[in-house]
Structure formats: structure tokens, C-alpha cells
Image (cartoon, rainbow over all chains, first blue to last red; front, side):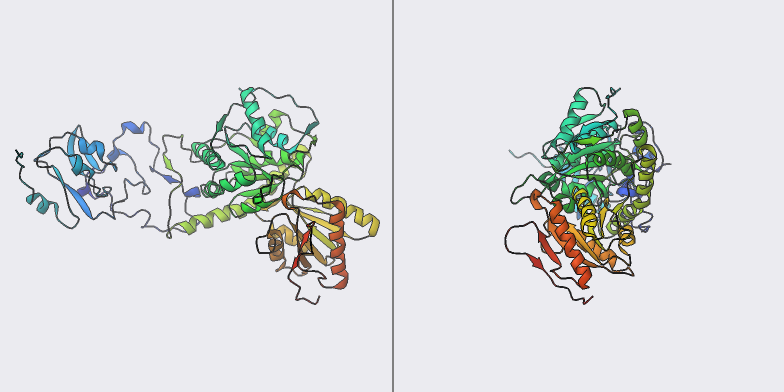
Length: 149
Length: 414
């Protein structure tokens, strides 16, 4: 099984449980939800995209429906400091081998913490309205600010 | 490995001690408790067994009953056999978490020692706490004496943990009249008791790291109803499994339990429906009345308050010879008829023979319920039967000082 790690891979297009509304006789006892479809040994050493996440995991389902502003990531300015990765409360910053890859829009709630903690000048992450295309957002990126004397 | 506890064939135990011995023999993994009168000795004794090496489990001291039941849920979700005890105000504080325990299908055993609810503050026994939890989705068993408190606590584990039930069980006994009354109890030896209860079978345990699960999910209008329906189905379906487990217990001990206990009902003209330690009072009163006055009185005592034995109550009361039934509620009814009255009357709406049903509120805050008072009420039922209609108010109070208190008149002529 291989799933992508970026939002563009459309891994989280489902609303949780919306596809198959089963009856009372088919719901799990005690509202117990399995994270995986199969057993997984040593799970800490298996990358998220390689785990058999079930439909009931928020990995497969989007939980970002209420976002109204989104962070947009600019690779050209980023210095891979990992500040945003550390601070994101929804583990929605995707990084591999300490290299920043982008935003997981299926789980990002648009809180803006990543933008706040970004140390570059100009910032490598900026908040834009949800409806704007990322390419358009990138074309509007501000210039480097001069230090005020 | 826990040490064996030497037990005589007959011990003199009060209800609290009996329940704590059953907890010890079941080898509970986690007891999270916040002791409260009159159930304090159950967890106090358990703490002593744990400290002295008679149990291998953990005893978790917590800051409230809310935390006690929360701890029990955590331990049960982790995959352990779990039990605790409470009463009255502690029970009330626990209520929020009781609903969570049943909704999450955690097979927790709660030994409840029934006590009145404030205000006015009162430590004596009535069924206010039992009634407070009756819609919480738990199985409720009721013990009428120490022996039953011991037997039914052992059965509670087996019922709760049965793979087709997986629901928490409350084992009720009356505060003081049962919990603090020393009586002869015939316990099982440790290995026999444990073998009856069996090893704990974990389901969806969080300590299984190869299969991570989420417990306690939120559901809104699109899923909540289905889960509650399934939970109710499990509670209703537990009836036949409880019967099977009681049968297995009888096989082992010779002591028979039924979801509805009945005494002298075959030829009964009047009947009293009653719970808790008052059952023995009522049986004694009825036997005497039969001998001395020839009044044919029978007694019905729901052993499982939940699931409510609608079917068996109906079977017991649908008799041609039965004319009048009185339901005894030991809990302030709060502006309604007593719960037992309502449920028994509900069961009688679909019977061929529909005896007259009346309601007594009695014994609040530990007010004594005497044989004489029971007989007075039974004679009153006989008067209803002879007159062919209810000759008193439908709801009355037994044993309260002051002017006679009664509500509602009958609209039936016979």
C-alpha cells in the first residue's frame, strides 16, 4: 500500500463515515474505531504513508472542513529550520529528512501558528483566503523587508 | 502470584465483606476507588488484601467518585478486569461517567451499597441511588442479603465480561441492613470462585499496540442513535445470558437465582413487588399472614432491575387468581408514581388478567420497614381484592409521620 503525503495526492477526500451509513446492527460495539485495517507491528518505525490506515482514521478522512484561511508555503524562501513542523498543533507540516515538503491541507485548520513562528524574511509561509489558488498566492509573495534604522 | 485466602465452609460476613471477598477472588486488575459510607469497607478491605499480597492487581486512589469511574474506564479500555464501589452522593457524582462506561461497553463491576440522596443529608439505606442510575445503560442486579451479595458479585463479572454482553454491571445491596449485617455466608474456595468467573478476555484493548483503537469517539445526529440502539439491544439480549450464568452458578453451588424471584405466587390473591432487604421482611410477613389470617399473599422481587424483567414480571402477575398488586418504591418519586409501580403497571398493560396495582413510597432515609407494616399493606390489598376496586389512593406513603398522604383515585369500577 502506498499513499502520498501531500494534499495534492487527495488522500483525505472523505468526510468521516459519510460514505456508508450502516444501520445500528453494523456499528462497532462501544463506538470503538480501529486505526488500521490490519495489525501493524512496531508501528513507530512504519512511515504514515505505509500504514494500513482504516476509513475511521483521520489520516484517511479530512478534518479540515471549517478552515477559511490557509497557509501557503514558498519553497524559494524556506531554510528548512523545522520551526513550523515543531509548532504545528495538527501535525500538518510535512517534512522528510528535515526537508520541508509542504502543508497537509486535509488536517490543517488554518490557525496560522506556522506563519507566526517562521523566521525567514520574507516569511516562507503566509496566510491566504481559502479560495485563492496556491500559484496565485505565490505570485503575490512580498519582497524582503529592509531593516528599519 | 496472589496468596490463597483460607476460608471456612461457613463464614460470618456482612454484605460489604462478602462483596470485597468476591472482588478479591475475581482477581480484579484495577480498583480505582473513592470510599463513601456505607460502601467504604468494600474498597477498604480490598486495599488490605492488596497490601497483604492476596491480590495481584492495582489499587488506585483518586480524588472523587467521578475520577474513580473515569479511572475504571481507562483501566477497562486498557484491557483489565476492573471494579469499584460507591453509594449515594458518590454515586450521584459518578453518574456522568456511568453513561460513558456503558456507552463504551466497558465490563466494569460496580458494587453499590444503596443509600439515600441529600438533601437532607442522610447516610441510611434507600434506593435513591439505584433509581438515579437506572437509565445509565448498566445491568443492575439486586442482592437481598450477604450471601447474595457475595454470589451476585461473582456472577456480575461473568455477566459483564461475557463476549455477547460487554456491559458494566452494578451489584446493589441495601445500606446497613445488608451491608453491615453479619450473616452466615457460604463462600467458594479461591480456586473454585476464580474458575467460575474465568480469565479476563480483553476486547479492543488499548494495550494491544499492533491494533490501535480509539475509545470514546464523538458522534452527532448521524451516528449517535445507531450506537444507542445497539447498546440497548445488548442490554435486552443479556436476559437469556444472565439466566444461563445463574444456571451455571446453581450447578456449582446449589444456590438458585432468577431475574425475578417469586415466593408463594401459585395461589396468591394479592402480591407485593419489592426490592432489596425488604424482600425478606415481606416474605416473612406474607408467610405469617397466610398462616394466621389465611390471606393468600405472594411476593415478587426483581433480581435484575435492569434489564427490567418485563417478560417475567408479566408471567408472574398474569394469573386469574391474582386480584391486587402493590409496588413498593424505596425512593422519593419526585412528582410521579414510583418507578417500580410504573414499570410493573407497564408490564401489566398487555396481560389477559389485569390486577389492580397500587404504589407505596416507603423506607426513605432508612426508615424501618417492619413485618407489621408489611402485613398492614397486604391486608389493604386484600380489601381491594374483596371490594373489587382500589379502596385507597393509588399512591400512598408508608411509615411517614403526619396526616395521611395519598395521590390519585381509581377510575376503574372493578
